[in-house]
Length: 476
Image 1 (tube, rainbow, N blue to C red):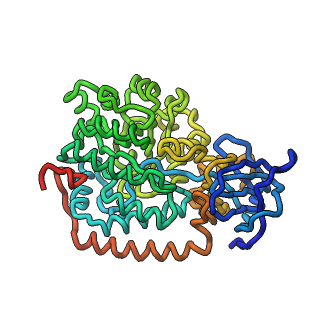
Image 2 (cartoon, rainbow, N blue to C red):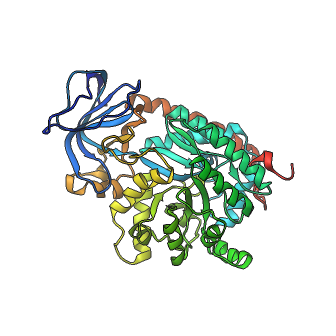
Image 3 (cartoon, one colour):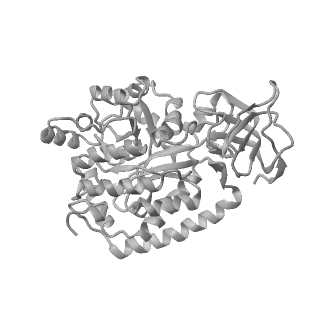
């Protein structure tokens, strides 16, 4: 355990030989100084700092370097330790957080069979289970260096409350699916997102499940609402070959092509899965500035096959993000694991090693932050960036030996068991060695109640998806 004690810090100008520093708008946040970190990676592919310190003040990164100013405001000083790696936060660009209640519930089935088991439970969920599931998932994410997530699930208020209690960033909103009045559904999603405007941690998102589980009018209107409010438009697309076949048969267009015809492709659009996206559809995605989210573990577990064109997308300038999907289809929310799986799946698909560690590290940080429309600089530790920092303890045999020249490779390929000692989000210390045991006890308590719920309802299947949001359902 590394000591936390009081010391002084400042935001005065530095000499040219001193650390880099940025000026930011003043707030009441207490400064946090990470001192003597063994390594600091400011962004994917950026130079690596050694034996360095990072000062977070007013909720932003304001100084990085070996020498830091003295005098000024008092704040937290955290001694990083000899085996510490300070890295930018990762963000989970696609999750169904409350689905930790369904972890392992129906694991060995293909997507459409699996969905029927999920729908059975989801029709019986209450806000209580949604909150407890989101809390367990949020703690899991914190424990693996993830500082925020974009959620698509029922009871968004409960996901938001769990995120706030833990200090996580989140993008939440009602999921539009089933037999709904599309205009009423979008209006409810719009109202929900509008209420969150200006919230420093929890923002809105317009969630439309897919082209096959929601009315097309909801896609068109939902996208317009997202652009109007400046929030993401979040949708599953081209996840299976069945989806592509049925879209072509019913609408005469491939799924991404159909979204283009509906006017639902823009810089706000976040396309999740895209394992069966056509090569020429990538041109539409690039032209409109939309983001793609790769969820490799979930895709493999549900046997959706296809191929997510990560390399072609990134090389063409498309923003690529990384997500875990939900705890029922992964079953992990560990973004370190997801990065490794992403590289391995891509190399297996390409038959070569063109996808490197830095590609997926960028996707998990900068790419996911951009898809979630987080503040400028999120996903980096560059000057002026939001104060989102993870200090990883690399003292685990799988991550040793650690050197400057193998740092990015260790983070991507060897860090499934790496655990953060500290996590700072928006300039607030949300995870420390002292807080870990308390959070673990909360997760265990919540999991016990979730187990009681699953035992009470038992197994089952539903042939139709739940209707959401409920106030917009055509039938009660």
